[in-house]
Length: 230
Image (cartoon, rainbow, N blue to C red; front, top):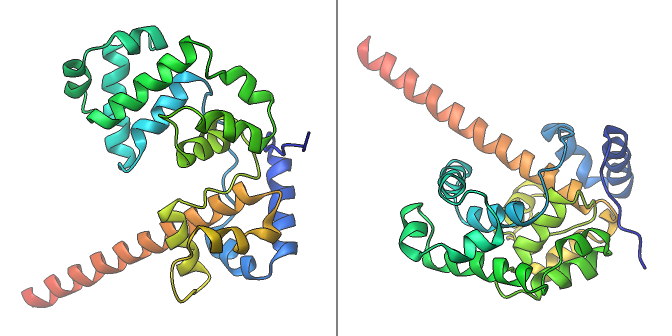
């Protein structure tokens, strides 16, 4: 069975960054500008963590946190049987869309009938773990990848379908267009076995660029306002 690399200590993170820089010179400038990703303990794993990722799809962090907070307050304890018994009106009142309600209940049912075994997922190699997760209809490739990255600390997960990551890479590496999934695989070929860390670096780099743009716009607006008063 292929070894699944994990980031479990700050030393693991340092080793991963050093390996990425040695593997691809293009990453030097990106890492220099983004800075070292902060080492952080993983989020919890299990049913609750998986559903939280489903809820967060296509939402801002603030919106996702609000909705999931409401869900946890209403569905207490937050367990598969409780979630499965929840009515649509209650879930809708928490801000959960109909498709996400369906996905959440599908996952809950899969855990209860044994189709989805999250304890087993922890022991499986990356590709096998991903296959086990995505075999459940409510879990797509993106959800599986984020769970493996953030909840299980897998170091070599590469979410090729993440549009935000594609855009971040295009800007950071000054590509002519946003890479598609096939191009994403090719780009990251030499970043194994630390593609999770590469993804985090690109996300941080993009966040930094957007923050700089907001700050520049705010300064320009303040200067224009000040000039208008003079």
